[in-house]
Image 1 (cartoon, rainbow, N blue to C red):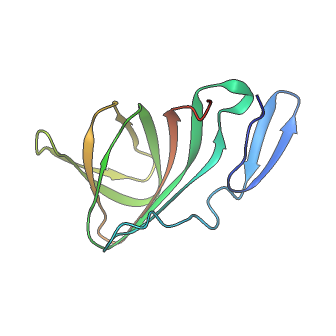
Image 2: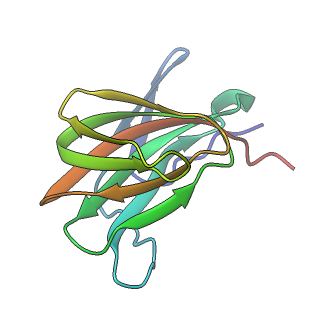
Length: 127
């Protein structure tokens, strides 16, 4: 199975995969009133079930998202305000914080200004 780079430039050094510029030109999530963009840098490299990429949110209406897979996210820049829609509990995630979203979790994403996160998800595009 061939890996696909959605955004950025893929380089390899043996078994090591490196994507440069994977956060440039993120496509809009096209949610009304929400200024959010997301894009995969790599998905399913060498047949793995892992995907990775960047998520960007600008101050706007909140984004409500339900995870259909397990995901971890590292806050690279800015801040996210996250509300667990089932419990109403809120957490603030700032630069270098790491988040885990179990499959089935519905989250409200907000930011006071801007947030950029790097994610790794357990999801596959294999047929």
